[in-house]
Length: 234
Image 1 (cartoon, rainbow, N blue to C red):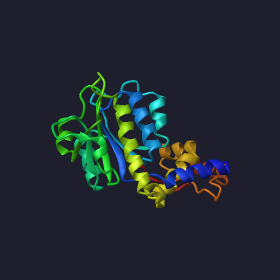
Image 2: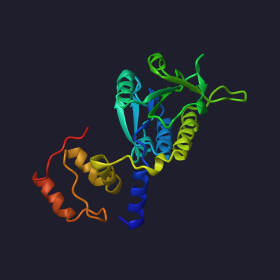
Image 3: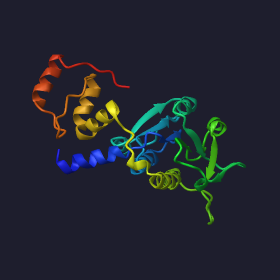
Image 4: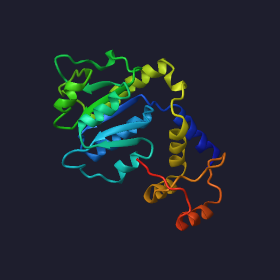
């Protein structure tokens, strides 16, 4: 691990926003999921929420899975469960949805804890999510087309959230700490070891001040011998 790369990881984690997220409501195209997660990473979202489509994800390739390296994704079978998870964190639910009460997306205060709900490509936000949302927002369109692709719409709205939060100094106030910070830093620094630990239910090995794992071969020997502390991952 080079010092510059470690510093990049640490600086990025210091800007992660725990109270800004997205909820994908059965978005089923892998390329859209990948683009959404790249945008989440770009604006500092730490964790996203995804409701699995009834028919599964289309073409869920390594590209989509690889995007999860930088943004954690919690999966749900039902939209109600995802909405409840956001509400339990006192987040305002903002649905990208055209309705009689919808407002210009720039009119909301995104410095508040916010979960942006994004619907499937054809069906849009589900009726249950529409009903549960605190706000409906739209992006004004001045041309012949009536809407953006879901990943483009998300980028437009989330960049406004980033702008507001930067002006409020929120990216200068680290939110990620404790075990969540340490675990995330380890996964970023040592993805292969982290995958091994997840596969076999093992506690991550300790890192030194340079984010290296001392005596790694010895740790692997202990892991194979069954003497490494066990751990259950969510």
